[in-house]
Image (cartoon, rainbow, N blue to C red; front, side, top):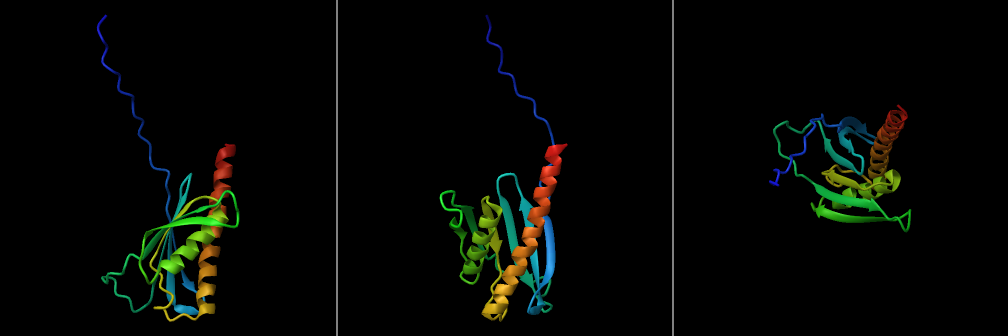
Length: 157
């Protein structure tokens, strides 16, 4: 009996289901600053990229990448998170880590957060910084709820 050549599995081409969302809005108490949010909700995690711009920014200027943090909820303690810094930029690491921990707790799934927001360079006071962070989290959570609702409706079909 001759050995048959191994069969090659057929590949089905599909279009990507990833639909990134890009949102921009003015930060509270920093009316000259626009926050930019890029969201990707994947089946097993979320990816969030954050940046800001001001009217004086030139289109061709190069901005630093910022920090990149991976955070996941701690299954043993729902109020805790476990995070790992993947890339550090001194000016944005604290803000990035804070944002990643908040989102991981709220989403209850792992989150990758890239962020170049430096609240000190924007000249924000602590209260203004917190209002901006709250606004960003609220906008992201609205999109998360819309995503969950769409996933539930798709599952029913």
